[in-house]
Image (cartoon, rainbow, N blue to C red; front, side, top):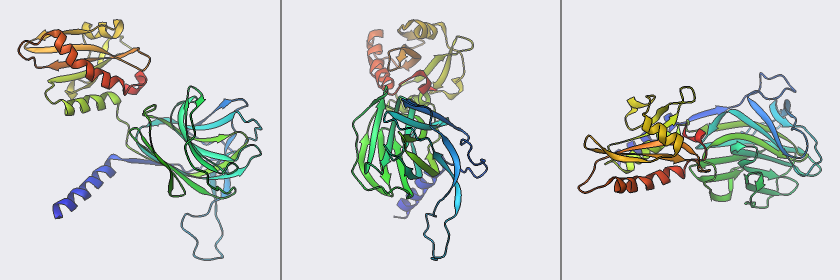
Length: 349
């Protein structure tokens, strides 16, 4: 039992050391200025939202112990535009970082709105037309999850629930791999979701139509981003330990030559590739053949649109009677599994 207890404690310590957290404090931002580090975008009709830092009364999460205690004012992010347009979404995107596995929470208050009274969190944002979001509607009395794909809205998922306006609430989203969980005021009101559309992306605040909403206490706890290329190499090496080597190469934008971006031999990262890898990258070619008692297979890696984004080189130990065609057949299922994880070339890096 003592060893089990130590193992649990050690796993918790490791998880803590591998995680990071960002909190957003706007106490140094002058009132009525846009929040620094964020970018405003919109979709549909109308103009950009009017996102500002303002002062508002925000009660402490810990209840006051005296009836005479006053509610302090603090800087909050507010979307103040009154655009009486149903087909209008305002996004405020944290623009400096992408997140893969994370938990994001924010306190929000719906203030007013004739058409809508909504506030939400957008996450794994690719651009303003491709992302997930969860939102609360005081006017519609719903808490719902949506997926936006090429600007088209997916089916809503979530319950009907009273969400009083002029009241602070807390919204939380957790993403781990392709699993998504959503909470409102500490209750997981939406069932566990599984979706493979977006595996990483930016995080932002969301409102719709003429909703005037306030946000505060935005916190993101996340696993620091690791390049997908390195993750793929590590995972395949762990799953197929008999592989003698594996590396992923892309075309260096400066030199226009292939460069190793991930390898089972860490010292190789950053080194230049050969003319074979260049031909694979530029001409979508495949190579397989023996060298010094090993089998080398070099094949292209494609994104979701079928464009070549990388070259993958496998080093295998041949078995008696194995041909280059057999070796290529062994490698292609691994390549297809890697391609299922790649949306764009940027994902690899």
